[in-house]
Image: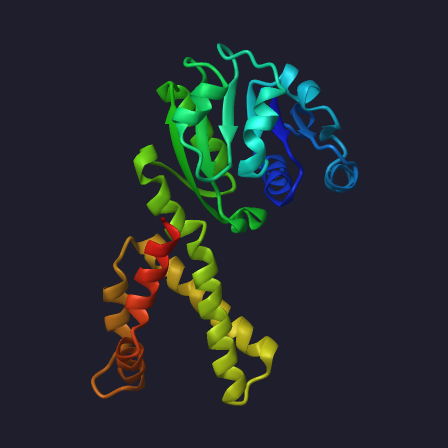
Length: 258
């Protein structure tokens, strides 16, 4: 199976690297197109078997899956200049905020289209990737899920849930990073070296996430395990709530979904 990736920016390059590191697609069957060479050269340095080109159409011609990894405001322009085989090719767009109804106007009513929203952790193969499908078969949905599951965790959701889910995952990763930054600042104020504080907080976040994902448990259950009566943790938890911590997170995510 051959894959074309249009755009070698941060997301396009991360997807290319993730596919190479996976087992489903051979590097020689991946072609990345970009108008300039610097990022393409970087990908060739990563894996010499990767195919690169300055022509979007050359990349698309033999591909069964076409991944559009360009900014949302460039999607229509890129699509308009390409010739697809809508009966054979699957189009995957990573551009946020563009509904299937618009892709139908730019392509064909029978086009098999996926909207895919990874987050920046895809560069470490730890993305939480959202996938919605249009005109695709169950087998095609399974294929795209498997591809992106090699780069973290992927979930298929209805298009109507995309905005809310994007706020929680694609935008939400920034809020987690903001928590790490705040914890780091607190550590420095209390006398820790910056790099030590950063590692301590980051590993604690990673550990908390692992507890939830591996045990399919609930945050409240895990919080109860470390909040002994009269202890230090419950004092900190109550201070967070007095200062509107939960409310701030909820408001931020709701704001990001609009």
